[in-house]
Image: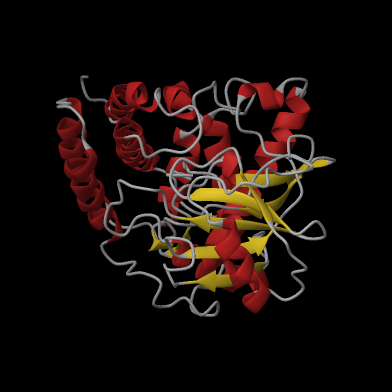
Length: 363
């Protein structure tokens, strides 16, 4: 988290105002700029070197850098420096799905190049076009916005999510992207296994939430491409029109599955329980429309039945709790890059409590 955006861990993010005009010339953690420069010369058309790179704010898993040759700007993504878990942080998956979706009307950055040779700079990495825009990450980013502004933003996000779920994955060339059948069951199993890999302390509420989700497990509502970590700060917005999403980023958790799982995640990130994970009050609280209003708008646009939405919201809380624990574990191991990771651990029990509450279970 994106999510794993680092949750997130978001992807190529930042406002025009916050970006450095002259990035540091030294290599930032996790990126050998000299080696990257040689690779760019051979693989990125139009690169005029030499490159400079700056670690972008945002992202709680994959590391995200702004790279420039003084003429053009790109975003480079690579896995974190340590604490990897199976199937997590796959930048190649991000690259492939963005390449497929760009031609299908979904707002994603233009893909440029993908390097699988870990000898270049220590890990696989991807290069995408930099997208200019505004990111609403915390409440400080929404200061000065009116209720109408927030409503317009919510409308644009929900419309983008419905648009993604309407894409035919077969026509997009993503039929083998995942196995829709049994997706919810596998999500429960996967995130429970991830917890065992990253847990830093006993937390009795988490297995209780897992059992409650197992007891409430429904049949899939349908199958579509799912983002896996869809939330406001994993999008880049048009500063002049917040209803226009210029790019959805941080696709490392994308697969084929139940689209209502994406809706559940979007709604869960509106909860103040995520504030400690994000190291600041989330942008979507309190000015953003409430979960019910957002869900009804999605149902109207998508035509999907949201009767069983409490399960999907609880599943999202479960998943985000595990992601937060992974962020905190990497912080304790000393392998996180940047600021604001210490609070992730405090968010985990709050997220578990929220999940149990959605399902009507005692804490």
